Image (cartoon, rainbow, N blue to C red; front, side):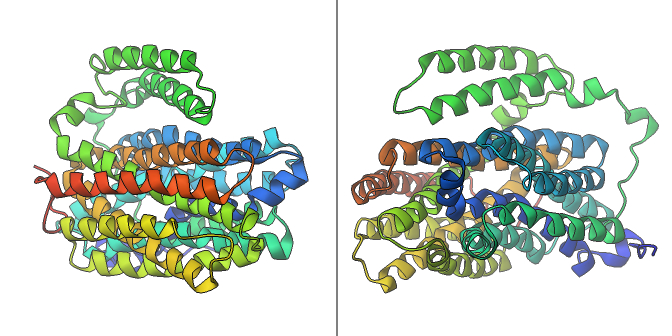
Length: 465
């Protein structure tokens, strides 16, 4: 049966046929990043490993995503976002099937890495498609378009623990991998049916793959990222040699990228665009705090508070609801400064309340705590994404969006390291409270930095100067 034609780009505008496919694909990376949180304990039991081993299932996806997001964005900018988007969905479906057969921790980590690479295509390609559609229509996208992208990512990330707990309780932990197959299939069909085809580049602007993609720069970037991840994973016994290796490769990366014709990491653009760099740092810090809650708090609920996997997922559900509502309200007026200040202030309060949680805490307090963390989850994400769209150079939207997600995963990797440092092999209440003190201090610093940043856009996502 032939797929329906997407029609001319102007005929779909920024309507539902444009938004629906990019929303489905953009959900896959966040939902995979958090869905496993409530399945870590059952996976560890099945494969005979502890929290230190299962932590690689989390960090493996984040490490792959941290490298693949800007790489996919670079490919999307040069060779077409729709092609990259569709290829990523195919890889996600194949990785979901591979999760059925993975019988060891190493193979399961490899599946998570493949999921990280496949799902990394969606967000930078989606942002590049929004920019391309804006150029075709000669108007800025409505706030609802960027808001839908934010809500999809936030809601899927926040609902991930509940979905993971439900699937694990009903069909076993392998179901959290298999669920990717129908999601990727639907996203691929809608992409081929509705999204406008990529505009061919003029013959005079075509370049070789080596020049356009800068494979050496991408390889050096991966070489800097992976030692940093391994170092963070062993904070309890720091491996300084990894830090030295990462530093040496970073020096090589800077030397090469300053000479490259089309650098993978445009250091000159970043040096000249300090507001964009601050957005990356702000986003990484906010998600360090939030991912500590998503993984650390959920493990504590299961191991110390004695709640089942399904119950833990349900206790985290209010976080997803509040995050979705907050991001929708924050995106309506396309503001930046207000949502960021309100979200970071709520984060300060929420980390303080986290100090009150204990094994005998009433369910109402635990539900309220999840809902309270939903505010910074939603408002920080929508505020920073609006800032990104305003600050990123138009021709590098995909790459800038990929680095935006790299910043998020840097925070996530640091979060998993902090959890391992404070918990060890057991998620104790004393470990949770020590973690809450660190998160509270980071939240206060983030609030002060946001207040001091006078370059934050106050209005909508206009083009960067």
